[in-house]
Image (cartoon, rainbow, N blue to C red; front, top):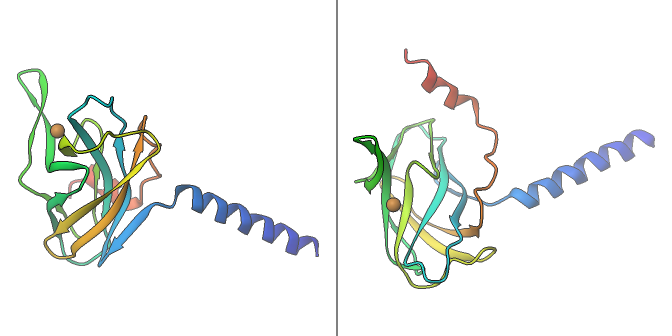
Amino acid sequence: MHFNKTVLAVVAAACMAGQAIAHDYQVESLVIDHPWARAMPTTATTGATYLRIDNNGEVGDRLLGVETPAAKSAELHEHVHAGGLMKMQKAADLTIDAGESVILEPGGYHIMLINLQQPLVDGEKFPMTLRFEQAGTVEVEVAVHKDAPKPKKKPAVEAHSDHPQ
Ligand SMILES: [Cu+2]
């Protein structure tokens, strides 16, 4: 009796936590986790979207293109250090190797929204379509936040990049 109650309480807590953070999408062997964009002043014409892609498959994939009704165009950008300055530039595509993860985050890769068609308001969402070479297309909902969400704990595979072997 007492044991059952405890188990139920743990399960309930896990479900609630899952609902609060569940915001991921699966297409073939790719998992796209928590797409979000930073809230911008209503006068802004550009914005940036971030997300994480896990490739749980046996073959690598590439993000080839992005489209969203929220902007006239969406480009994959990367930040590079040039002459002591940080600047961003268009990246041709994004490779997600088999068993690896790629994180688009502030200061790194991001999806640049150019000529916003609607303001990016904190708490709102907009759809975005990602086109992958292998997995095809997937539509995700991008959540608009004022601040970067706390990163989830990283899976063990990412530790491998620290050990070139
Ligand atoms: Cu950019």
